Length: 148
Ligand code: FES
Image (tube, rainbow, N blue to C red; front, top):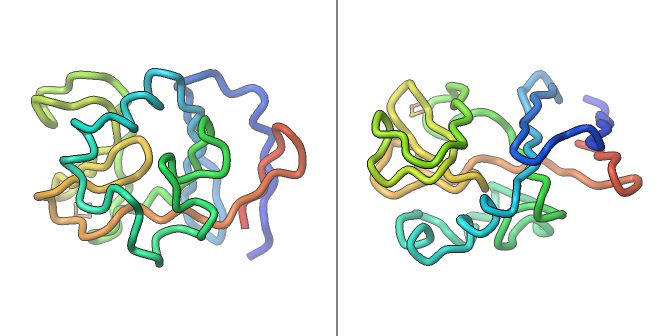
């Protein structure tokens, strides 16, 4: 499939849109400052299976960083659970007793209860084995994103 181009200038902090690339749903989330702080907190990192994105198949080299993206505020991810392929749900709120008593915002897969943070990193103790996949992406200018 051909690369797709998206204008992300209208996204509000905390807002997520879904696009399609190669027949797959892709999320583009504009993370706010609080989300970025949470993603860097020790307390969260301790609960993740692969906090440093060591599994190479799950992201391009330039997204093997703390926020798993080229620009910290924009998170681009293939919206397919790495367990058996369901589409997880965006649950950005802090505190979600139906998911986890310590929930700090992330993605929840309703099929078998896998949990991911807002960088698509999988929590320990859930069925999904690895982090969500980050597709190849780049920017042609400040706010025009290319996926593919
Ligand atoms: Fe997501 Fe099984 S497909 S937890």
